[in-house]
Image (tube, rainbow, N blue to C red; front, side, top):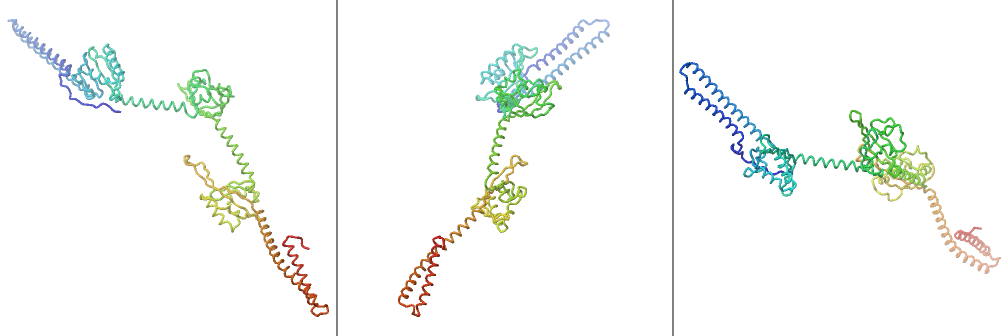
Length: 539
């Protein structure tokens, strides 16, 4: 915090602080007066000196002089000691670290210590005027300053803390203690303590306290405290809002803890939550709202005794379980939906970890692979695949684990003892699990693998391919049969012409008939080929 600049001024001369000097001079003068009386008495005795008994006169004179001189010495010594004491007191007053000043009836400085002279510059010795000017920027402080002076003039001790402003901003705070000097009603003793740091600390403490109160009042959990009779001593706004009321209504009314808890045994102490619960306790109870609706909560409570165990207070934290119950219900429904989708899926589904070990699978996959759950879980997926396909499949699955997408499904043949063909579709997933460091949970990588049985499809494809081949053969045979049919038609026609030219008795007649018969047999084969190409019934 800024403070006003300190401008040290030289100590005033001794004449500026007349009190100890006057007292010392007063005692010295009285010593001289005593010495004068002694001398005067000696002179008078000399004048009226008796003629007789001179010895007695001489002795009396000597004794009287000795007593007088001793008295003067004692007085001067005592005056010197008093003067030393006052000088010491003055020096001690001057060295006080708290600014202090004594003013007379006109407000002039009678004596001021070094701290005061360093804190404020006094013109013409008018200390009271300089002090009034120091607090003049704040009208409220100025009025209170005048009230302090008025109270002190009336003989009352006045105490107040006033701000010192510079440029409209508070640069420091001073605690003024003002009172009359005992035996000197016109003299005022000013004590001006610097309380700026204390005020700053008090303000910081008030701000922190306000933050703490606000935190407790509006914390995301309910907070309350009850005494041994179950009466509420403190309720925060959160709990009161949950109950549909206000903290003041709960604290200032006759409502007790058990009045808002449903189904609690009457035999329990008014502050208890469960039977036999002493000290720390956590209980799940149902609170009754203002509108009569139930409020499920979990209360964590500790008990603190006071006044040597005669009284007690609870420190209780209330957690609303309604959202949690809703979350649990929603999570249960979500799990049920997932189980329906996962367990009852018509295709095989498996979850594998980063080492490709099976951690979960559905019934469809067990049926597909003809395995029991205990023989499949924690088993490396690669061991389910034919040896010649393992390396390629493992490489592709690890590529998906690395974050790459699968370009095409993986075709495998499982070791089931049957001729099966499966297509594998894989997708990476990331799952967070609890760890020793809650701020950085472990992330586990794995794969979701879908198994689709394509065995029947493969058989259909083979049959379709075979039928296509047969169709091609039929088309080829039909084309050849057409060509052969044309050739045979011409050949048989020419044989008929030759038979008309040759008589049965002709030696060539038998050869021509043999050619015609072979041509007819070939024509019959051509008709069968044409029937095959047209998918007709062969005869």
